[in-house]
Image 1: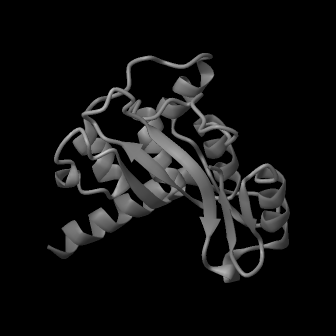
Image 2: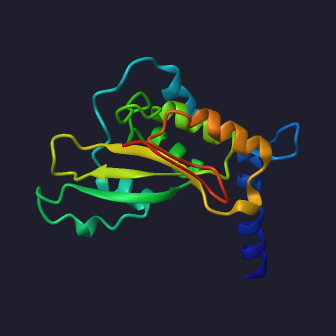
Length: 177
């Protein structure tokens, strides 16, 4: 049993190491998966979202049982890590070129979050029974001020300069309507 546990721990560690790199300041960055990179290389939106909403919602931490009818319009999510955004893009659950109004698109969000993987995204998903089924990212956040470096704060302010709401005090938070 201990050998199995050690093997699993080694596997998890090797997956983590393969997904992160270190930049010149010694902070961690994220290596976007090859599947997602292949999708991002294609120009133009894809029309066929992955309709497996149970998988989509599981990645987002949303209980799909909450969808009871087409009148249930949307569900909000928060704390979306770059790893989970990578999964959503690779699984074609989110269009890399879709953006909510003036917000950056998913392609821009993942590129920025790769530089600062401590950030998490928030937004909403549209009910799978609705014609406009999708994931919309509304902003970014870091709730723990102890991990916010001056460089992260500067980059965050620049990336989120057009957000409808922007907080850069003890926390970093942006929101596009």
